[in-house]
Amino acid sequence: MSSSEQLFLESQRRIPGGVNSPVRAFGAVGGSPVFIASAEGAHVTSAEGRDYIDYIGSWGPAILGHAHPKVVAAVTEAATRGLSYGAPTELELRFAEAVSERYPSIELMRCVSSGTEATMSALRVARGFTGRSAIVKFDGAYHGHADCLLVKAGSGAATFGHPNSAGVPPAMVQHTLTAPYNDVPALEALFAEHGAQIAAVIVEPVAGNMGCVPPVPGFLEAIIRLCREQGAVSIFDEVMTGCRLAPGGAQERYGLSPDMTCLGKIVGGGMPLAVYGGRREILEQVAPLGPVYQAGTLSGNPIAVSAGLATLSALEPALYAQLEAYAARLEAGLAEAAARAERAVRVQRVGSMLTVFFRSEPVCSWAEAASCDTSAFARWFQALREGGVLWPPSQFEAAFVSAAHTEQDLERTLEVAAEAFSA
Ligand SMILES: *Cc1c(COP(=O)(O)O)cnc(C)c1O
Image (cartoon, rainbow, N blue to C red; front, side, top):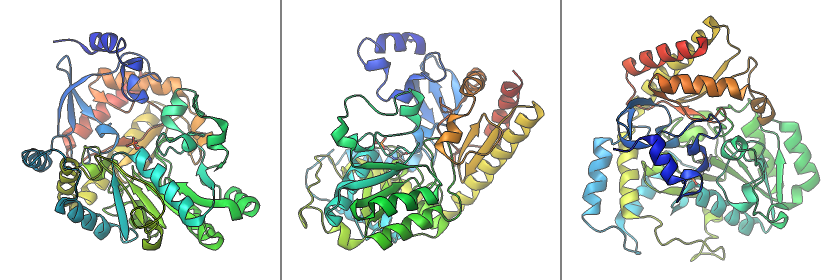
């Protein structure tokens, strides 16, 4: 059996940086990444056979825990009926019904294969619908790696110090306006100056990609109101928050109804599946009904949709109360342990997503997140890892509690975290 270190060395010969997505490379915390051999419940097992309590959760999808028996059964059963047809199925219909049941704002929707595709397509549709070009995104928010969105893009990009990617011609981002997260006056000023050109505002309703940053009261409401007043489309990018903060995501939690919504991660139950959808008249712009082109060979793939359906049906309302309680306990325990060790740390949490910021004041924006002590975070991360706890390897990410985490897992995590704060 090869060790993670050896696999990492070999992978670097064939795969850029040895990984298929940058944050996996541990660039922000040092050392070689943990190569995973298998996962079950809230635990992952590394290539060398070491067990870790996992808070990465595949970066969000694993809300039920890894290898949930119902999801595995649905996928295996579906596979025996063929892997892909390139023709519509009843599964896609049932999946769309299950999504709109939880998201009343989604009247019509399309399945795509990644969150990146969902946001990219949603923006195209919003531009087609409004006949306008400009879009607004917030500093530190990440909406996937479409060219026009790689501006001030948080976590992965921020972690690696290239907030604006090479390979993106200036013309691709000339219509992308940015404003600080949680700053209503700045957004009002953008609309005052460019209102007639703005097709859409896209927002993470709870930011997760600069670490967990909740919206200040009135911020999301202002986005929806300004869009409505000025004929722009409000887009909630709920790829991370969707089905995590409530069955109906952040929009259910905060009682809001955006024009469009993007989902991913949890809705695919660990398979490549994402969704964009929203108001009927907007989605009617999409081909073959309307003039906006968007397509996909593997869109609505039967295996992925089966995993999604099984996940949605296993996510009973009672589970959210448990997630909330466990995550609250983790939040309180981490804050207490940091205080005992006299560390300047702020724990921020919404539902089952949370971040331990190495800074004493609250974090409301990218500028504030960026002022954290990232080397203190890196040392804390490594101590957790040595103690058998796998935390997301960047200061600018959210950790996820799953329904499979047990009280024992939490207690063990808090013990290791307390030692790590004192180290
Ligand atoms: C993960 C994420 C995306 C991108 O999804 P991929 O499936 O990685 O392309 C987009 N938006 C948000 C808010 C995300 O967290």
